[in-house]
Amino acid sequence: MGELPGIVVTGASGRMGQMLIETIRSSKACKLVAVTERPGHDWVGQDLGEALGGAAWGVPVCGDPLDAFAKAQAVIDFTSPAATVAHAELAAQARAVHVIGTTGLSDEDIAKLDAAARHAVIVRAGNMSLGVNLLVGLTQKVAAALDEAFDIEIIESHHRHKVDAPSGTALMLGEAAAAGRGVALADVRDSGRDGITGARKPGDIGFSAIRGGDIVGEHDVLFAADGERIALRHVATDRSIFARGALKAALWGQDKAPGAYNMMDVLGLNDA
Image (tube, rainbow, N blue to C red; front, side, top):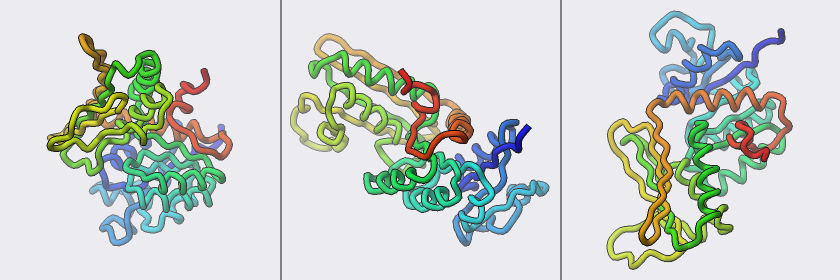
């Protein structure tokens, strides 16, 4: 049997970072070889197990991502847009699969990620759960079947600490709805209602964001016409679903050609 692929987790002290660490360490299909934190963080230079208050694991906490990436076959990244763009270039140099769950990326950021994907595998998704990606596919099919008599609203709810809105998942759903209707989301997106906004414009895709408590993630796609409504819904109750999906993507990408992929590719939903 060959050696197990080594995984690096960026942003190890964050909630998703720690969930990813737990998920990887419990897997028999890979091994955790290093983690990263920002320079100056208290954990940098320590063994991860000791940084977490226990015995040493033999897993270093690196302040220089390139030092960590050189040890790995895959990098799992749920950090910030600026950090993720910087990581993409380094992961490409290391020829490591770069799995990106970071949200809030701009068009310019995505263009830089696409450039890095010419040299290495990048799997990027606003949400890595199986259920959400099935919801994305259903949203596109329903939007394609219904005309503009049905208004489309995407309602998302997350915990009070989330810093971007709409969520990456909501934007995935918006892109799917727009694709179903054969339009560009940028041309029909409505996410800034406040005050006297006037009547809704036919064909627009609306977004509403709720922030509160410890909500892991809830997404509804509402198709509303006169006299009837269709609602598609996904509720996440455990952040581990995202970690499991990210690990699945990291393992899936091991034998793939360089390029930009998403979770629909990982799950085989783009094959049809």
